[in-house]
Every structure is written in C-alpha cells, then in structure tokens.
Image (tube, rainbow, N blue to C red; front, side):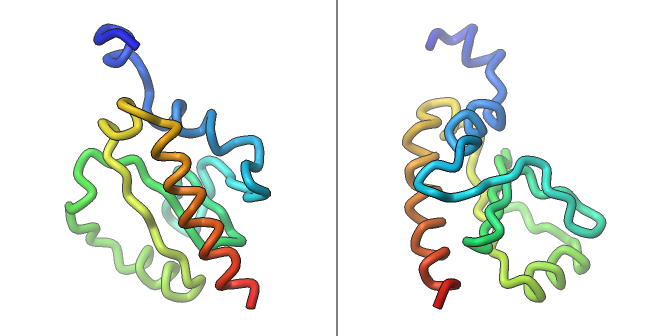
Length: 108
C-alpha cells in the first residue's frame, strides 16, 4: 500500500474487514451502544471491546464507562491506528487470539 493510500485509509474500516465475518467463530459487532458511549468493536462472548485510538495511554475520565466495564466484565483493548494501517491482518490475528482465550475463560 502506497503512502497516499495509507493517508486515505480508515484504520477502523480496515480492521472491520478482518472481524466482520465471524472469524474463528467469534461474533464482533461494530459501533455497539453501551449506555452513554459507543464501543467501535465488541465481542460479547469474549467480554472484549476494541478501540482504535491515537493515544491508547490517554486516561479516559468516564465513570459511567468504567462502571459498565466492571458490571459486564469487559476489557477494552486499545490499538493505535498506525499499527492497523501497517498490518491490519496481524492486528486482527492478535485480537482473535486474545478473544478466543477470553471466550474459553468466560464459557467456564
């Protein structure tokens, strides 16, 4: 992919191409409404949400979001867009590996 194409690419759309067809039997939804916020990607059976965020280390000052996460036992994995733009398939594989292990853990 050339530099010009990378500049126009949307990392969320690129990642969705790898998660939308129930890979490895995992059902992801896009733009999941959770109370007063939206999770870009969510896999309920794995209790896992994915955000593509420019600054994954930036503190999120959102008490309602944290309470929802605790109540539903959901972890939010934050992925820098630059990683998705470089190799969306590799990022998706890492997400699927984590989601598969979490699904097995929550199935018990």
